[in-house]
Image (cartoon, rainbow, N blue to C red; front, top):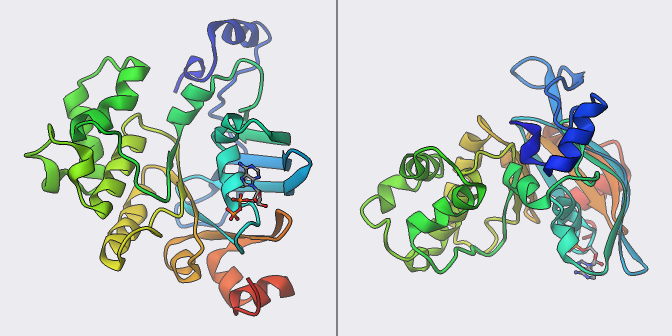
Length: 288
Ligand code: ADP
């Protein structure tokens, strides 16, 4: 990835002149958890607050999210999970009353820093929503969309195929690439949205309750897919389904009312032996 994918030319030359790379590949090692040796942080928040007008939705959240793993965000409705997720690709910029304090870095680069282009950022940090939302365009056009706005100079059809294969959809749609994405089933539409998000080859795929509008079979396909996607991408998923978090995630972050991050640890630890009594109460269904 070159840094000018994220920044406009002016900021790039400014950063070159002070020698401060906007995208660093030399990221600090943060621990030894995980099966592939030392894990590396891909995205980090530091003292993150988010307000909607005067209401605080996220309260001082600091998190280091490791690459190539699945991180689940859980907690009761309204505790700020979606708000937190949207901070990671600046989707909150689109909400007039939203304001953030604190820092979010992607591979060490402040994504709210001067000169960072939110559109370029969203190609590096793609997003999949609760309700599948294909564009009213053909399957091929849906997947090619990000590539075209990016001015991709490779073989678009080859990349479309690759993304559809990676989203476990190619075999089902390869003979109908010109047909509308909206003609697909709900589960297929969600996999199409995943293909659209990964076509520009992001670092991170954010998922906001991606299976809650789907039937159990379609949901299970998405869960299997997440397990494969994490080989190539980092997945951060909001889910209200604790069994799902326990099944598919490596780490779990538990938010509680008021936008506080109460505990963030290996998923097994969170579900089997959390440190915080409030997490225990939430997991065992005493509230929320
Ligand atoms: P969760 O994803 O955990 O259900 P949200 O991030 O959606 O929580 O919401 C956190 C808090 O922020 C809630 O009190 C919610 O009402 C408020 N909120 C979310 N989106 C907006 C918005 N666009 N405008 C104003 N308040 C919002």
